[in-house]
Length: 136
Ligand SMILES: O=c1ccn([C@H]2C[C@H](O)[C@@H](CO)O2)c(=O)[nH]1
Ligand SMILES: [Zn+2]
Image 1: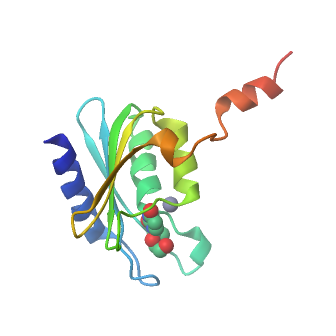
Image 2: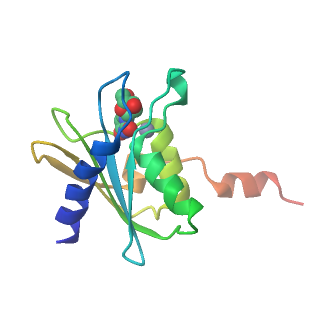
């Protein structure tokens, strides 16, 4: 099943996380319309605020390869309940993913929260807002 496979891949993606500061590896697996899966992990920095989350790593890898038609995302971490993406990632996901795209939030115990992009960030700031300001 595509969902199970994607969740498994997101757990494997944690293996490449660069997390010397938090020691909290996160993995993401982003499925494209072509059936390709982009993996992402969190990549930290001595300048803490420069950290890139797993979700944004996966999106940026795909977009930089010319792939931007996304159909599903899984995110995993060792959390008590399903992992919860940060606000920055929710905004970046809203830019590239369809509002109704399924997102599987998981943990290592097998808890799964099945949600969507628009549920993760209702009322996201969008390109439509910019278009209105640029009228005439
Ligand atoms: O959904 C999440 C939540 C947190 N992190 C990372 C950022 C940082 O490296 C570490 C602790 O916040 O986890 C992610 O990659 N994705
Ligand atoms: Zn994030």
